Length: 240
Image (cartoon, rainbow, N blue to C red; front, side):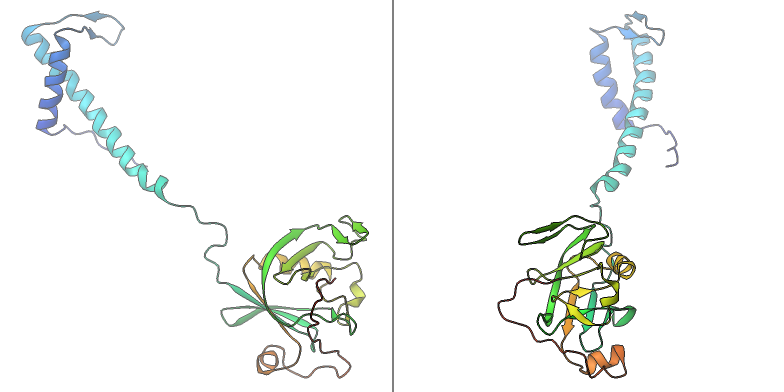
C-alpha cells in the first residue's frame, strides 16, 4: 500500500488536542527524544505544545486512515475453494456403461465404467454426492481392507446419498465396461482419480437404467444388446 502524505490536521483537531496537551503540560513534564524531561511554562509551553501536538495529530490521522483502509480486507468473508464453480452433473448410462461429467450443459469429460451385475443392479434415479474420500478403507460385515492394491474400491471413493452406494476405483480394472459390480459405479483407478478432482460434495449424480433422449444426446450410438439394464432393488443398502 502506498504511503499516505502527511498533511496538517484540521484546525479544530489541533485546537482540541492543544487544549488537552496544555492541561496535561501544567502538571506533567515534557519528555524529550533523548529520554530526558523538562517542565515548561507560559508561552514556551504553548509553542512546544502546538508543535508536539501537531506531530501527534498527524500520526493519529495517519493511523486512522491506515486502519480505515485495512478494515474492508478484514471484513470480507473468505470464499471456500471452488465456491464460484458451477455445480456439475454426473450422468451415468447403465446401457452404455459410461459416465459423463456435465457443466452448464456441456460435457467436459467421459469415462468407461462397470455397473451393477444382474444379481446386484445399480440403483437408478437422481442422487447427491455426500462424501469424497482419498485412499479409502473398505468395510463389509466381517471384512476390513485398508487402502492399497487389494482394496476393491480402489484409490478414491465418492459417496452417494443412497446409503452404501458410490462411484469408486477398483482392484479389478478388467471389469470396467461390464455389468460386474455389486451396485456401485466402478472406474479404473487412474480415471477415478481424475474424476475425483472434478467433483464436489453437493454435485448431482443421475443414473439412467435405459437409453432416453438425454442419454442418446450425450453418448450417442446404441447400446450393446447384452448389457443388463439395471432396475433399483428395494431394500438393498450396499454395493461395491
